[in-house]
Length: 381
Image (tube, rainbow, N blue to C red; front, side, top):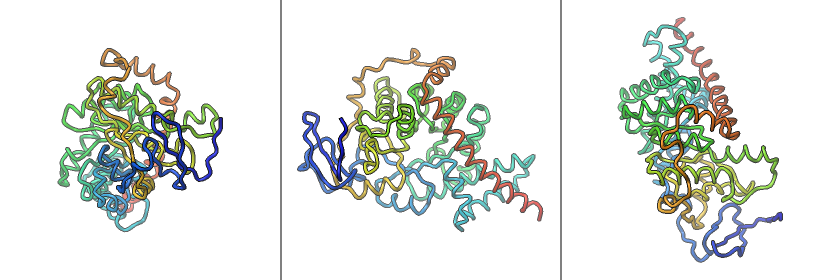
């Protein structure tokens, strides 16, 4: 049955499907009556049950939300680094120029190596600026072109940490981001054993999450909204769904539950959000995963959370997770053959991982071209 809402806000309890209407759009409470609402913003409420990270490379925006006291971490990716590097803003232009000068002075063996060093240093320059604003983790991504090269990913991860330490940022503050390919997961296993914490990103399938946890990854970033996107296209859906049956929400809840049941310390930090029920309900997935270990959220959605005072009920918790019906995968340590088979058989995981890597490489290509031009200008003088 199709339900049409005209500026509706609805509430229901687990034992009731009675609806209450409001004109607050996606600012709603699904699990408690209106009388239970309090004056705290949803941002504040969420921060008390889930550690929050801002998904941005904009220093002013990061500072704004760090000042609320509810955001402790920040995540970046090749898109944010590219945007900063190509923005022309004087603040970011200096980060780029400093990175280029550093790379040129290092006397690398060729232009390609010089560009690579400059890109790493730019990411670190941006990360240091962010680390001066937030008190927690800062994630910095290894070049996505190395997503299928374990050795090179390990070396670049080590170099990024070394660059941070030279600028006074301890490795305990940094998460090295790697795409959750088999090679990326193997790189994370090596780095974690060296005390370098990793954030495995572009998680779209259960097998990726399990393999990351079994190999000791510190944190994973499943992309909730992009999982939903894939299923909508596959099924030809145009109508929204309730958040609790949103495929991205279901996938992230399953990962969280598995980790808790089998004693994995890997942090589940969902990212990439969509409105389960469609436009006007942009907070659906965030609210449906309240209580997960961490979340990384873009500024536009942080603003919505900040401007809404409806109750945010806790949905995920460790005790219930430990009672879930998940079974141990791969006898506790999945091997490469089974990983690749399971990922290949997962259409969403396979398709979206490849798409995400291509997109990140595209942004990296743009930045590398701009940095190469600057290197050539500097070395020609």
